[in-house]
Amino acid sequence: MSSSFTDRLLGRVRLSGLLALAAPILAIVFAGVVTSIILLLNGNDPLATFGLLLDFSTKPRVQVIILNSATTYYISALAVAIGFRMNLFNIGVDGQYRLAALIAAAVGGAITLPGPLHVGVTMLVAVLIGGLWASIAAVLKTARGVSEVISTIMLNAIATGLGAWLLTPGRLAILNGNNVGTKPIGPSGQFPGIALIPGTPVKVFGMIIVAALLGVAYSVVLNRTRFGFDLRATGRSESAAVASGVNVKKMVLYTMILSGAVAGLVGMPQLLGASYSYSLDFPAGLGFTGIAIALMGRNNPIGIALGALLWSFLDNSNDILDFNGIPKEIVVIMQGTIVLSVIVAYELVHRYRAVAEQRRVSRQLSAGAGTPAQEVAA
Image 1 (cartoon, one colour):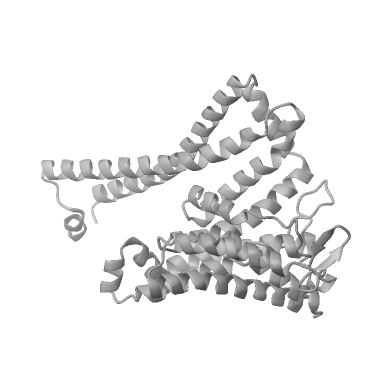
Image 2: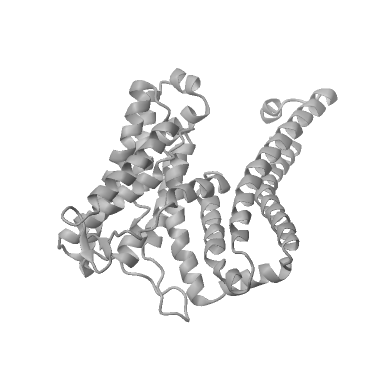
């Protein structure tokens, strides 16, 4: 292989890496500019506002809360990303995780087992319920051609109604003061926290380890296995996947069930690490947050982790704005602008990369340069 070809190849790899970094950086900068303009129009100092957010996030207790929220967001985004990699839009993560958390909480509160086994059974129930609920949309798509977007949205509404029916005294819930919830999970079924941040007694969810392992498994399965190759191939071109022997309907079924199974774990950090019961105030809307973060992270496990941390930082630092007379809705504006900007920025980078590649090939043809394959042979 000639040294000139090697140099050009390394140059293109470095350029590709810089372009990949440029998109999210440009998106965040643009979101900051838009937010600054809105703050100025509202009579607030942008630098002082951003300074308040950053200063508030340096407090140990806030850092723990940010990590705990990011853990939940990360699992939700991974569930969404599994479908995205195959062009499947699992909008039903919200219903899948809430129904899974409810039934898992009821099972976890009803049994008594040795610690790790108790936790494992509760999590297994959540995985099975999440996958089972997602399989309804998968079967409708493969058997009847129903769009998964429509079916999962409808299943969210059904899960909400079914959950409300189950979460009543006499069924899966008990009355605890003014609140209604499942029977509390005993100490053996609780996932112990980690004293990760010094200066505060509040602990980081132990489920952060499970979230990290899920990220590793996601990367390995998608990039190092035949199943992952078939999934990505089907997402890029169904006709090409069929030509290579992939059963597209089976891949749709398996992928949607896998996405739902991971979605079933979304409520576990809160259930096993904080509330130990599913009640009326159990966090909702995490599935839609996962969609935004998966888009921000471009379905990459590391990008998703950074997006989850950023989203959690904004979510958990906005209360300080309210205390200082600054509308905390500014954070919502910034989050929405970041997601939109990331999508636009990556599209611009993709187009720039395609144009640059076309120009490179044109220059080679004009100069009479050999093709890379010829240079390798030389």
